[in-house]
Length: 250
Image (cartoon, rainbow, N blue to C red; front, side, top):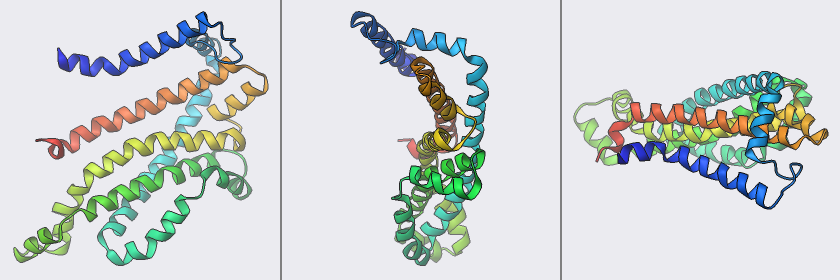
């Protein structure tokens, strides 16, 4: 019974928020131009589905491509940074400085380089989700105790064996934890780029809707992005439990 409640509690909370939102909109007579009620947003989703879903697929595509690039790049660089002290000292300040730059500020530069379209959205999704993956993988490797490495070496383990059999598995909980965070950030990056540097996608749809003062359609776009973000987060949460269950057994 408790497990069933735990599993259903997120859905119950979402429904409660929607119900409170709906009641508040009715009681306080909030204009749809200011804050449309959930029922109005869902009606808008159905009404404009012919325009929403193609743009949603575009946003999902750019997000997944950029996120896939971030997984590969973040994992490889994280392993290098976390395992080799020299690379850590050389690259970490540069990476921190680059991550401090607002990614929205890079969108105009990407437009100059690649033009308006899919590529700036993919690259923005990549840039905004790359750093958390790299940092967490590097942190996972850095937590490998020197004493443990000394013991393994005394038992005849090579540097490669220590890395493949101990270091890399120890970094997996950090890796999957970072994927859950970076997945949602990738959607943020893609939509930011679509707001001003694309001719398709949910961000592009929202800009056009706001220009026509169709606020329910803007919120419908936000709902779609939120739903896709939750779905991708849930996928990696399942993968995390599948591949790193050993790390949480107590």
